[in-house]
Image 1 (cartoon, rainbow, N blue to C red):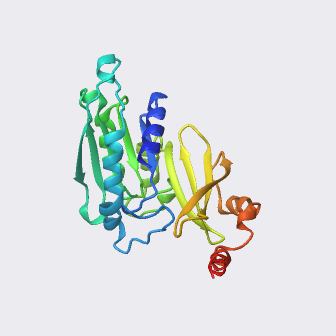
Image 2 (image 1 turned 60 degrees about the vertical axis):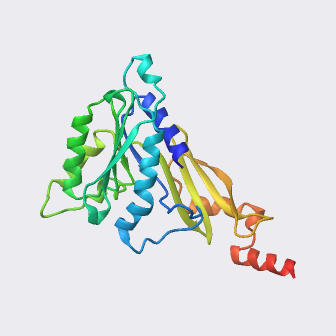
Image 3 (image 1 turned 45 degrees about the vertical axis):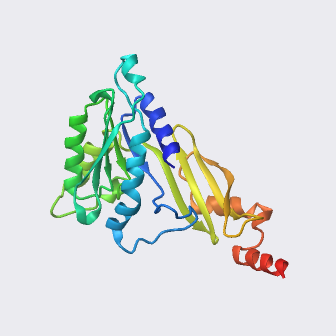
Length: 256
């Protein structure tokens, strides 16, 4: 995921998008993409085992030099990556990439922010400190859109403030996203990498290797694909004429 996301981020940055949202499929190191994690330890476990490690790896890869100085843009030394907790109990963090070419190439990312007004205000503060030319990312925020800010007696203007501090600033630009879902008992994935359309995949058991599943491209979609779209495309494939359980039983019978 890291290389795909880094490429998408850099293409978007080259097109002038300095505020971006990244949605990784969060999974611990060693887990297969076809395993849908439950995270019994909540956001703190999610952060420790997946969100922070992949965010740090991402910022080691991304190069977003805003300087027009060619020598600075071509500097090849890797950046220094630093991580700081925001609130330890909810797993939120700030990951910073300090560029070897100077401050104009620094990148910041806020990991696992939620709809609490603290994060909305922190995003505003960081946004202002980064300026319009440097890259600032939100990674796996706990909201889907502006409707996630429902009415709150303690913060009656929360939705308006979120609109101004987040969406009006460009964080509605989801330049990389990998969503996994189960459709008809099959594990599916929807991948978006700027500037391309969503790509739709379904996983099928490998013919030769046990416990290995390979992705099959189903098609593409301008908008984020729905479960219904996946189901319709899966039903058209002869490989999925039988359910997953039936295919597994069939393989067992063939081995006998």
